[in-house]
Length: 142
Image (cartoon, rainbow, N blue to C red; front, side, top):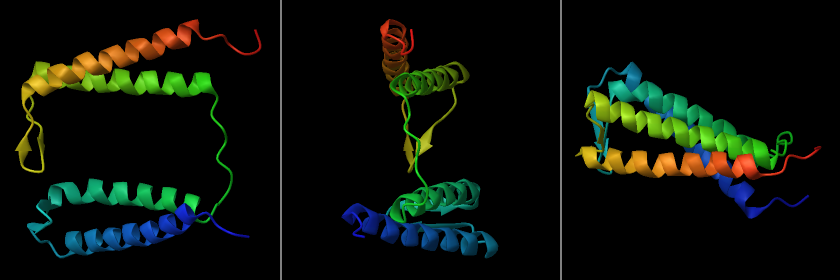
């Protein structure tokens, strides 16, 4: 049985994700204040969320790389509803940032507040469009 080339890439990436997870475990256990590489600084504050992310990435890559189980097909209506909910959550998160005045810093870049206004506009429109498309879409079985 021949594997797809992307499955081989997924196996390699799963190994890299596992190595990164083990490095993060070492980093947390050694009580270092921070580590910098490739312009990114890792601190103790973000090490645990990064470890959780690495576990999720590893599981997805292992599932795809070794074809474990079958992923059930998602119906189109369910997918559009999920997309609409995600865009709604993103819009609400941007509104929360605007009303609380919270700072958002990604890789030492302080994200300006006007970008959240833009994010509210785009995410709200995409959520509205998704819900509207869902409402006019014919349901199967009717």
